[in-house]
Length: 120
Image (tube, rainbow, N blue to C red; front, top):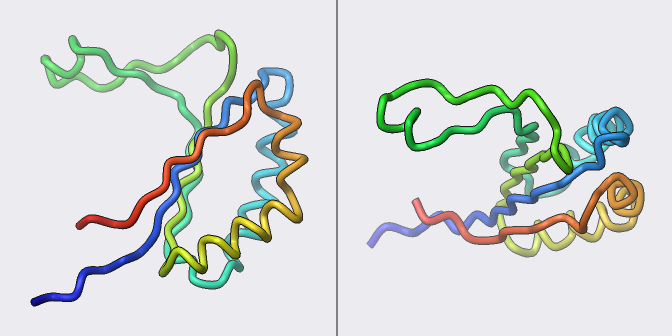
């Protein structure tokens, strides 16, 4: 039987106040350098939501539509993957001890975290 890769992943959704976008993006550049040094980190991606897709685009095979206006917040996604839950836990503590409060000040609501082990 093949041993399954048990890497651990978090997808974090940030809803940033429109007036805090520049501050948040500058902060996240600094945070990225910090996160890349975390023990056990396998992959790190940071994404700014800039498009949407509806059923018409999907049915027709059309590209997504660019978002041109901000309604309530600007959304960002952080995707990071670790070699284990233990490495992830320590990285979370390190982030909490250093940048957590600065990040939270930029948000409309507390960020969402989606956690899990790699399936395939």
